[in-house]
Image 1 (cartoon, one colour):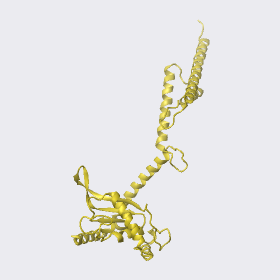
Image 2 (tube, rainbow, N blue to C red):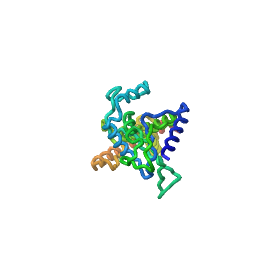
Image 3 (cartoon, helix red, strand yellow):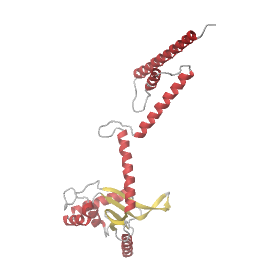
Image 4 (cartoon, rainbow, N blue to C red):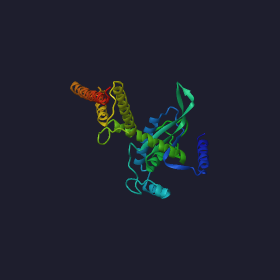
Length: 290
């Protein structure tokens, strides 16, 4: 049965590689014949152990890396130590580890494993060391198998799907970075609003100014000149600080802001009354005598 599985996998790989959209990934491993109880985290931990053991045993040599660089050409990612060096062990080398699930087979509301998964590494030497340590391994020292030995090989990828996945991951990473920066966890520790928050804030400020002008017009104080409009803007620019969850303001600061707002409202009201009185006196003088 194990031999049949390997032959079927090889035939499937050859068929895919006839299409120019498919290629063999040098960083992503396909692990078959897994036990159905294996989870993503268990597979990741086992691959890290196998990687460390493979590097310690010298399963990857500088000659292997030189062959890889020659085969990949200019698109290859060079190891940190040079062209023909093997990258040392790094516990953060695994980018993703995912066991494939069958959503049509549920048990207790949980989808069951399909018996295989994928692990992606950050460089080729680590993926190769893990492959050589795990492939055809009979004993369950790292990962328990369903029956027989583990079948580990470099996975065949669709270049279009890979690009879509990279764009999606990039978008998610940008959102996470913006969220961290908004929480004050950036390099300078400052809180910077993004474009959407700035637009929303400007829209709220504009609506508040329009509402205040409507209130003044309803009270009889029609805004005619730039000085009155400026006073209205000043009134709206002074917002009484609200008590937030993160920062509690002192009662003195709240009282001071309220007093300043009331003072500007009073000044604007006096200017409106003075203009109305001036208009009335002008109308009386201009009215002809009968």
